[in-house]
Structure formats: C-alpha cells, structure tokens
Length: 544
Image (cartoon, rainbow, N blue to C red):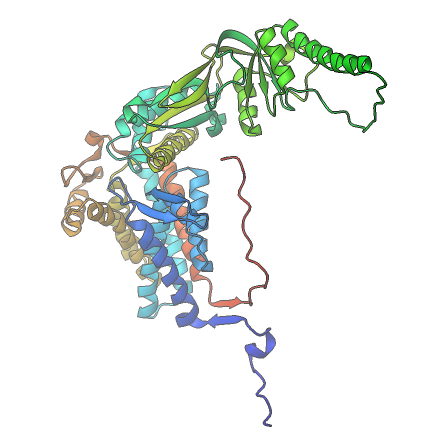
C-alpha cells in the first residue's frame, strides 16, 4: 500500500473541506463578476421606466416590484462579495429610504471599470487610490450643483415637499406620482413635529384595502384598523378611551387553590361573586367617564355582556405594536389589567366608527383636533402585489420627507447631475499625473451608466441621448437632463425633476466605499459549512 500523499502548503494548514481562492484571477475578478451579476439584475429597474422583477422567496411569497431594496433582500444572496453591495444598498435604504438602486447599479459599474483597469495591468491598490480621490472630488462638485435657495424651505409647505419627493415616488409608480405625492405630503405635514428634525417615519401608517382604484386613496387623521369591534356598538364620538393590554376578562389567580363546595347554594353564590366582581370592574371603567375599552388580548363573554349593558364600545387590537401606536394617537396610557382607572390614564378620540370599505370591515379611529401624532394613508388597488408596490412608493415618499426635514438641498434630476459630474471629473483626471488618473477617468465614465440606463429602460437611443447631453453641458447648460416622455434632452428646472442632495451624496459614497472594500480583497478562505439543518431566520410575526 502506497503512502497517502500529505496535503502541502495552505491545504495542510486548514481543515479539509475548506475552499481557498487567491490572486487576481481567482479572487478579485471572481468577486467583481459576482457583483456585476447583481447590478445587472437591479439596473433594468432603475428610473421611472424601470422594469419589474418577479421574486418568489423561500416562503413562496410572491413579490412583483422594481424596488431594489426589496429585490436584494428577498434574493438571499450567498456570495460574500455581492453581499457587500447588498449591505451598501440596505444602508442607503435605512439612511435615506431611496436610491438603493443607484447605489447597487453604480457600484457594479465601478467594478466593471475596475476589471478593465486590472486587465490593462493596474494594481487594485492604485485603482482604490484613484477611486478615493474621485469620490472626494465628486462630493466637492456635487456641492456646487445644489440649486440656489433650496437650502431653506418650509417643511410644512405642501408644494415644496411634493417637488422634492416627486422623483422618489415616480421611480416606483411612474405616472401616478401626481395622485400619490399630495397624499403623502398631506400625511407627513400633519404629523410633522415642532422641530422637523425629529420627524418619525413610523407616524405615517399605511392601510392596504383590496378593491377600488388609486383615485379612491385617502388620508385619515388617526388610525385605520382591520377588523370589527367586538360588541354591538359600532360608532361613538368624542369619547374617552381606556387601553388595557392584558385583556378584558376575569383574571386567573397567581396561586393554584382548591375550593370545596358543600351545597348547591354555595355554588350559586360562588358564580354570583364572580359576576359581581366583573360588573364592579366594568362599572369602575364606566364611572371614570371612558366610553371605549381597547383590549390587547381576549375579551371574555361575561365582561362583554357588562360592557354592552354600560354602553361601552370594545375594540380588540392583537398586535402590541399597533396598541402602542393607538396609545400615541389618543394619548392614553396602557394599563396591564382591569381595575380602578386613573383619569390621567385615559385617552381621547374624536370618533371611532366601523366602516365597510370594498367588502372589508375596518375600524377607523379619528383624531382631528390637537396634535395628532399618527396619520394613515388608505391605499386601494386591485391586487395584493399592486398594493404592496404602492406601499413601497409611499414608504419612499415618507422617507424622502424625513430626509428633507434634515437637509432640503436639491440637485437637478433626470441624469443632469450625473452627466455634469462625469464631465467635470473627466477634466479633473487630466490634471492628475500618476496611474490613478486612469481610475478617475473610469469613475467619470461610470456615471454615463445612469443616463444610458434611463434611456434604454424608456426604449430610447442611449448613444444619441448621452452625446447630446454632453454637448448641452459643455456649452454651460448644467441643468439639462432627459425628458423620458418626449425622448429628448430638456432643462429639468422647467420639468420640475429634482433629486435630494443627501440621496445622491449617500448613494455615491456608499457605492464607492463598497467598491473599495471589494477591491481590497485578494484572498478568499471559506471553511466547510457546519452540518445540521440549515439556519432559518425567524420572521417577526408583526409586519413591522
């Protein structure tokens, strides 16, 4: 029997079953390739004419959307380098709420440029230096492109808010932004606090109800809860509310005890005392002036009977998140169980009514007066996937509003900013003397991907559009972008297409950071995955 050959080198050092890739061809180019594949998927969804993707996740849930954040979330990407791009997209989504597609697609384009440079013979570290210089220059140029006077705005002015969120909403729901934007702007302005920097996205809720169409969408000051009230009282106005998290029922005692009953009389008395106790609890609520009980858990039969007798409306909210929001809307304090109610713990609502919208019964809680802290946008649509997509558009709009509360500066949209950045960065690359000038020139070229993709997605001739954009910008018209409807280049200030400065700034910054991270990797060492059943992420039960 021959001696078994001992593994040598790195193979002998690591456990068997691991993978080891090193060097330019194996590690760097493969990483770049994986990232390029990801950005190819997202690129066709860029802009208002972006195509939808149909993604079916591991739970068999169907997503039909052009929202990159949703697509990359549901794709369950395994490749470690592509995951870095996904994380950059997620960071953008969480920071600004829009521009995730720009981040992922632009990063893919930068990596494509880096691959060309590597094939030309540049070292990744030279490319990284060039890209870092380029992104710093881009930030400088971007500051100069900010529209004059846009740094001060009245966040409660509906028109100014619509102007800034129009581009974000149109990229998800093209052609319907004129209906959606006023709704979103209304909802945001209603819940905007005295100091706009503290604007909370969670205060604008979305209720999705099947049926009807987009023109049936409305905003409600207050909450829209799916489901009916528990008792027979369906409408009540100007009422005080008590919120009980533990449910309205006879409470079981903490300790277990045995009751010995000798006669039928004792049994009757035992039942009566239970009844009397429940009545006493409900009466205490009625005496405090509360007309509505909101329960966080089950409502007992007997308790319901006495609530009906005292003309108290009972509403059950199973989700504790919704219960918290309800407390925020009404100003109530959540109590653990039924008992004596302190007047300070009561909330107030203008009206609670059960309405039927498109075959579904919903409870509408309105709070028109005073500082209403929650507003609901009621969306109507024919299918679930349309409603989901509308919800994402609303989310984007609300997130944009949050961003503009902090920084309201705007830059020209419709690829005008990108072409100007490309042109000025190209000029900057000629002033550099080292090898990194090639990397800066590639960075500038990568910006062309955005007008090119916008034009291709709209079915226009990309080459013609880009060359006429360059010509216009060279003659000093920095605000010329693509008018997708007419397929021509126009001044975007007349078309009113503006992008938020912070969206562009963060998207480009995250993309450049992700690219530099991917390029810095020269070895991949993957150990053998652990055995046992695959780990599944436990989904949260509430939709939040």
